[in-house]
Picture (tube, rainbow, N blue to C red):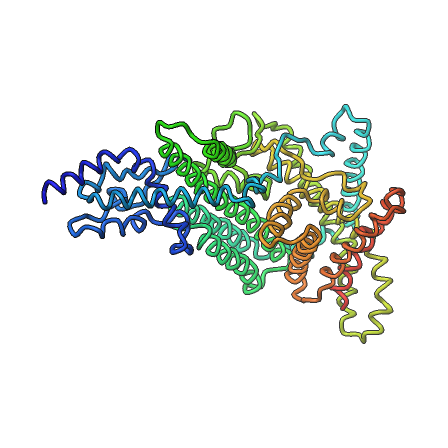
Length: 579
């Protein structure tokens, strides 16, 4: 009996080379087998081999965890090696060895069947998150403001006119009231400012929960495909719910509410991009383990004999899949050494959260140094435009808003009669405020942040003012949000729900419209749907602008675009104020 056990041990030692090379293949077979169809491909290794120890009463169930009881963690993207022969398989019987070999062979057959099925051969593996490319860019207004531009004089004229208007308004206001600035808007800005700042800091700190989840996925404690994405989705719903409920509960002023709402939406998009990008890479890493295991199985099966043409084809296909997976797990920047899962750290997440982008990548193009003269120039632009916006709000917005609010108690017909006059009064001030808001965020603030964080891709907007179609405006007005919607809404709708491009476009516009309507609800505390309807009306306008008549008449298309920009926001704002 002892000799029989020893013979079994010698058999194991003789087969240790094949077994250790194909241990991962066995585990993947357990996951791929119809009996285990519901399991994730990265199932617990200890569960995968429990049945192997049951064939002998004296065998010992293998312990595939580290000495501290935690799961094994690879330092690179290679397959986690399970050294069956070098650990706890010393007492396994010959019958168990044969069972291992049989199941390893079955695993290879299943893998090969899945990889080389006619439907699989037609559709080669395509990277999922390669739709957004980052490269060094300079914003358009920066180029036009340079001394080499033929429009540099107009840029100087704009700032000179802004300074003169600011000085004139301050002096006139001081002569009439004894104050340089009216206090209505300023008092709203200062109200509950410390509480708003603390609330924003708490929301920012909550975002680091994403790193904890991704580290658990890297350590194979959680599977992204089975539970990881569900946990992330529930967390995101709770996060945005808290961000919207807390300001309402504490009755923050409308400026504080809208600031927390917009910043929480930015944080939400950044978290979503980080989590789903890293979650996808965890699946790619799992697939890489599958392909490398299948390749090792094919090579061990060939042995010293001459491989058949079918085996050569299968091996070539596996090499292609492995190369594609390794490419996805590495940064796309040249000479970069950043790879998944080495990026799943708190420092990497903090660095990403500081960058002026809503789309996560393993690495971004960076500048070598900070231009401090440029930093101070942008700081001056931020504060200068900010005070100019306060002046416009005090001098033009506040009286019109108070008049519109006084109409709420009037009968509907009287409000309808008064509405056009209020609209015409609001048109130009609102357009000016609209443009200044765009400038201070997408040019001044984002360029300031990019300079301080060495972020080289400054393509935050395109020449949207030349738009002749509304979809062109949607792409170029706010490039960071457009990149997020392109990757995580438009393309994800096509890949996840198998919808057409037209349906994905409608889904993207609808989600954007709902988010904008949510912001209006936070400001006015009323759910009316005016902005949602007006924004969805852009879809038929997009189709209209693609007709041959408007496509060949770009001047008319640009006139229609500016007419919409001139009247749409003012009309929407007055609807919320009056009705």
